[in-house]
Amino acid sequence: MSSLADLRRDYRAAFLRYLPRRAEAPLRAGYEIGRAAVVDGLSILDLAQVHHEVLLEVITTVRRDELGDVAAAASEFFVEVLATYEMAQRSLPPRR
Image 1 (cartoon, rainbow, N blue to C red):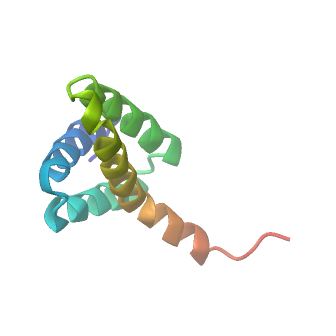
Image 2 (cartoon, helix red, strand yellow):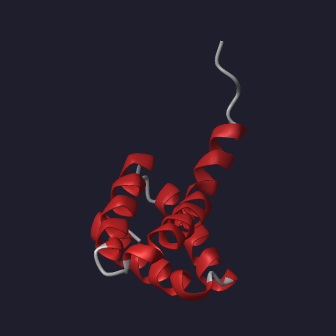
């Protein structure tokens, strides 16, 4: 992944695969998206923006009674995407 356009494409595809069954494979893809974003120097703010864009697209297509499930799935997926950033931050020495 080398650009925000690639990130959006990959994020959307993995999230849409995750939504119906919340399976491990697309969740793992989310982790890999986050790892690739770190390697490519994309910021956590880039990830947040893409997450928000994709979530907004999805919620406009679901029934009102599905919104809670979609929001929960989006949260689970986003946490997995952010896992690499969390690990990187924890590996840094504490600030004084």
